[in-house]
Image 1 (cartoon, rainbow, N blue to C red):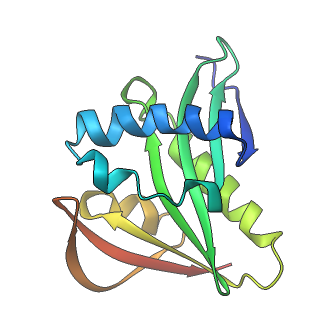
Image 2 (image 1 turned 135 degrees about the vertical axis):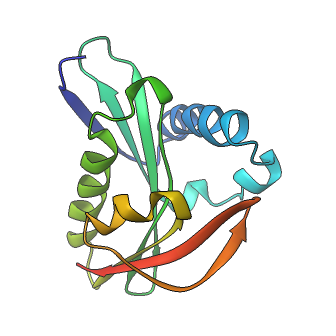
Image 3 (image 1 turned 90 degrees about the vertical axis):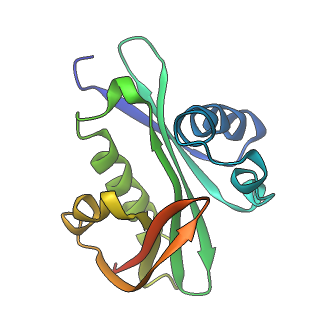
Length: 147
């Protein structure tokens, strides 16, 4: 991969299905998240971001953005293992934040970070708050940032 990627954003059924394939690989298979916890029935209400490798057209990462009041909640952020360590997650988060800024009335972003990923999100301007909690058997902490 040369580093060239493109983004698809939306909530068309095909895009959601492709995003779900990545989430199934990363969360259900790799991280042993129970399928009934991963599939919360809210996919159709969200914006989905799909990252595609321009070299071979492969879908390599995804994230979901849910609007709640004046907040963009970033969720289900996943990069396929073979593509980690190449700043794809950073580019994905930046794309999600840029999109959130275009939405009327959105003033901040929120996410629930797996604790091991907190330093990654801090580099992107997020600040952790509150206590550590369990989400699908994985320690998490909420993080926020102003847009």
